[in-house]
Image (cartoon, rainbow, N blue to C red):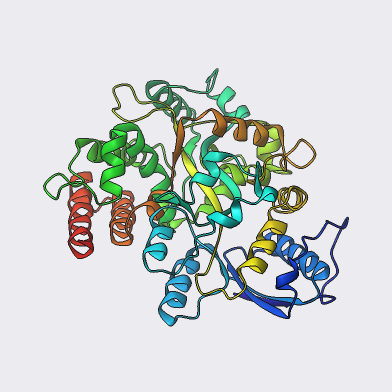
Length: 431
């Protein structure tokens, strides 16, 4: 956990100076903002420290108290914060149900009128901004845009006799079998932190369950007798379990974190890994970069009743507390943080993909990253991360069940029984 307090003159801005966003005349008094996010890692925190310092330098009357908590602990931290009532002025939240629960609780400010100002127009792709829209109102500002792809090692594919990236599920499973036959771990995977499992299951749900059915189930709007009963859910878990039972994952995924699995993959010890677009920059200087790499989306499943052109992913960003006493200042800071200049710095420093249009270029990102952004543009839509798109108890049941599948202690049908039970309880309490 990292806390930083910033005021004018407390920190020099590294690199070229970025234009600050100045406050409207009515917000020129002394202001202290609290700011909570989930990126305490050295490269990430460097960007935020620089960006906050740039803003406070341009606005000497503003001090910003910043706190950063890592991804998994953040989920517990933000719930404690909400229960305490001491809600930060600006805080990170995942899109989907994770944000909707705070909107229902009255903890998030409707910022539609602020985002209607000229300075915000054209800053984000409409689909990116729409992820923060609930009942026609906008509640958040995106920082980055992300999606999930299979990244593959070109040298190992060639060694296994795989001529091209697979486009369909039969081609995909054939490639996995070829890698296994060549004594190459087909997919590097670490599910010790359960969120990693949700990306596979969420993508498979999107391919195997009709879109309208899935969306209604996730929102708990389906009649009780039909809730989470579509056969596509069990089929999705069967496809997921097959990665382990067919030997397509490394052994004991539950013993590895995603970061450890990524290191193994980047060291040339596996043919593929299911990675986020924001991870692409981490390949620089690794054995993977030496071998050459490319990527493809999770392949289409013949006969799947979902939308095969959807991509799993979402923007990350921030909301403003409904209790914020100086929303003009909070929005001015978010405007500065997501400006094109800061977006370019964000991508350069963190290697993550800024959500700001025009901020990711050949000067700060790889050719693969640029093509990944293009792929997002071609997708029919985005499937938000499963564990944040469903009600928290449903998400917990899914995560525990997916880990149980990797441990061989439950079947897909048993997992879905628990998911359905959690959904029914959540639906009953909400009605």
